[in-house]
Length: 302
Image (cartoon, rainbow, N blue to C red; front, top):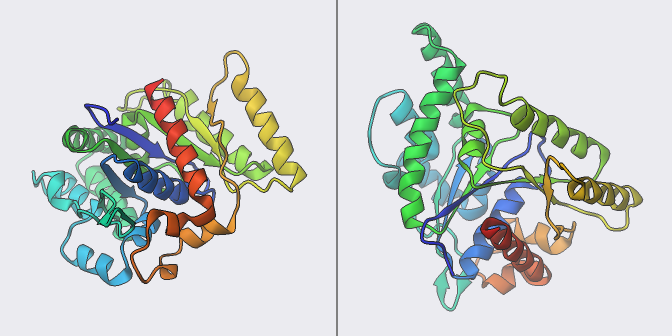
């Protein structure tokens, strides 16, 4: 059963290509299939999550109507427009079906201008002798107010964060009830996770940031796991041992998302020119989606 107040999950990692958008889509559709009302906020200028939910022409029309997170942030941070986040939401953006109806997923899409917007804001603040902390503080205020509304309308709000560390990603991480960090169990990906965690969680108290501390430790989700690779098996075991140790600096999902063709197929909208059912779309990965949602619910409650 859904919570009285919506819960916020940020899916983030400094490294790209580790399955962030895949995790967001799995969670969004999995929670919606379970009867929860879901909102997705795409904070990645690559807009991969937006493309996964909206066909090209549909997304183009949404952007032309200025209903994107880029337009929302620009209107608030550059132009002082007080229009509600509700006016930038695209309702029922997911075309996956359950019992004859589209899954209840609404979305604030992203556009490629998002990365340019952050740079433009920094330049304008610099002209007024303000620095990065001012951008962080203003972004925090705007997104916190937006989440206040979204929490009253949705059971789950998902942030798909861009790779790296941007001001918007920093704010999303600190406002979230849970931060999920998809990580491939190999050397480079775990190295990237260590750098990400140290940058955001360990150094938060000495950066003089205008932002609050993250609410809890990051939760690592092993993604794109190849059980046939010795390195993946050994690294995954090492991560689990580290997360279980006393004083661990991160948590670890019990479930892992294996590298399987069914997930790759589900993530390509061109494979579904029709409106598929949830089971048709996820096919042999349907249990993986439901298991991920089940554990996420348990960890949110815990």
